[in-house]
Image (tube, rainbow, N blue to C red):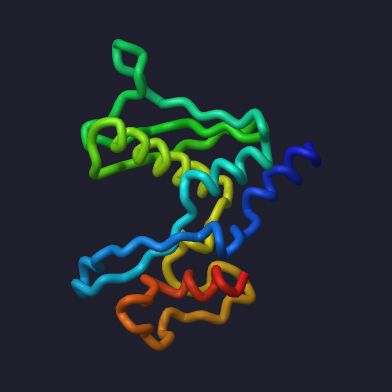
Length: 159
């Protein structure tokens, strides 16, 4: 049990800055473009392999052909198993076809891995995720091309 807990704790370690990407998104409330930070499919896969070389995922539903089934919203529910522990995840993509399915899987894996604590500081909205986090969400805005959606960017760089 101790080995399992030690291995799972590695999922919660902050990702190195070079493994954190940014993607521009339009803020629905303000209409401004913000740059959200995320960990990509490759960096997450590397972390999963480092923690448990035998990790796996499976769709929660299958089509009659045995393929992963999408829900009524086009999303994909999965089960991610790491070190013998299984957690759910959900992915959604705007793309269709093969690229859409790859995006769905990557999104679902990131979502399920977050349930294990992977990259939580990037998912958290607002300050105070960690006890020593002094950010309040009231920090000065950065210029639009580098503005972060919330204080996660400062925390991720600090980590």
